[in-house]
Every structure is written in C-alpha cells, then in structure tokens.
Image 1: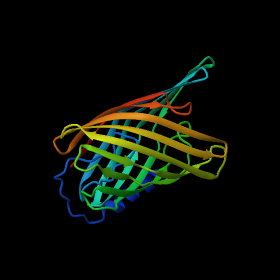
Image 2: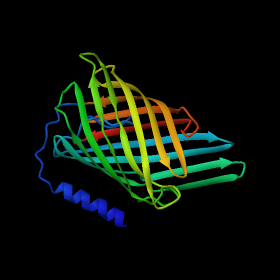
Image 3: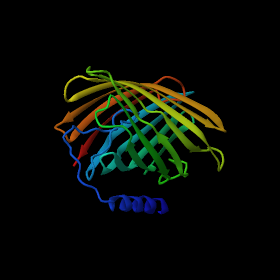
Length: 266
C-alpha cells in the first residue's frame, strides 16, 4: 500500500507541472519491442501507452522446465516537456510455472512497479543521440514473485544514424543497485544491449540485438546473454504494433522468449 501511494504521489506531482503540448508530426517512438531503450521522449503534454499484450519465456535446466507468462505489462508515459518524460511501468499479471520429477508448482499475481524519468540529452535529428533514463523499482509484487525490495538503476540510451541509409545502431548500457538474494544488502548489476536496426519501409522497422547482463550477487554471480530479433509496424503516426523472439545463449538465460505488443500516444 505504501509503495502504491508513493507511485500515485509521484504521478500527481509530475502532472501538476505545466506543459505546453508538443508537436507530434513525427511517428510514434517507443521503447518497445527490444530490450534496449530509445533516446526519444514523449512529446510535451501528451500521454503514451506501451503494452506487452503477452510475453512468454521457457527455461529448461537439469530436468526442470520453467515458464514465465506476463500479460498486459504496461508503461504509461507523460511528456513534461519535449525533452523529458515521466513514466510508470507495471505488470498486472505474472504467472510462473515450474515442472520437474518432484512435482508441479504455479505462482501468479501482480508484479513490481517501476517509476522512471527519461531526459533527452541531444538535439532532435542529431546523427548521434543520447538520453539519461534513471529508475526506481517499487516492490508491489508478492514475495512469491518479487524480492520485496526497492532497487534503483540508470540506463544511458545511445543511438547512431548511419548516414542517409536505412540502417542505425543503438546501445543501452545500464548499471543497477540490486538487492542481495540472501540478505539485507545491495550489490552491483549491469546490462548492455547492442542493436542493429533496418527501416525496411516507412512503416516497418526490423532489428536484431545482442543482450548481456551481469549480476554480482554475493550468493552467486549470474551472467546472461541472448540474441534477439523483432519487428515494429507503425499505423499512422500514433500507433505501433510489434512482435519478436529472444534466444538464450547460456544456461542462466531463458531458452526462448516470444512476445507481442502495441503502443499508442495521444
């Protein structure tokens, strides 16, 4: 309840900041569908909703089969000005299933909530673009699904247009302060996403990315890696539909993850 009140108070505070409605001549720019983050922000005075309609992953290891399903994972963004937006992300339904020779178990419920700010650091249309994207995770999930602890971090989205071609490069280095798995302390964690994008048509964008994450938990270091592919299709200038798949490259990463979603702004 306290976490929910904090999130609600933050929304009210940001919404009370005067904002002149920004222009929306450009097509919608979303952080979906890849694991990385775009450098763009939501136009001033406007809302943007980015929703994962369904996200399912499967991990097989040592005779155990684990699957995770997330439905309706949503980010609500509000443009404070044309270079800064406020964001709240939440997971209405998380369902975790485990099967092994020892039996079967299923856990489901509301997931954690994340509050974010994104500040664009470079001019619109620049060949090289950058942003600052700090966040705070609020533990709204039960301890069967989350760890029940506040965590913080920052992402630095970077983008590079490759001349006048349809190709682009992007990266999303991230550093986190994560809760220890076996005690009250905190430790460092890091993630990196490298993405190659191709604007196949004015409406269709294709991308392939390489993702890695490192978690230096005192109870055991975890390293994850995946190669991912996705497609995003814009309908008009205010709608985007997307789908993709991620493939794990080591034991600590889900073997496969498939997802689809949509984004809209108004």
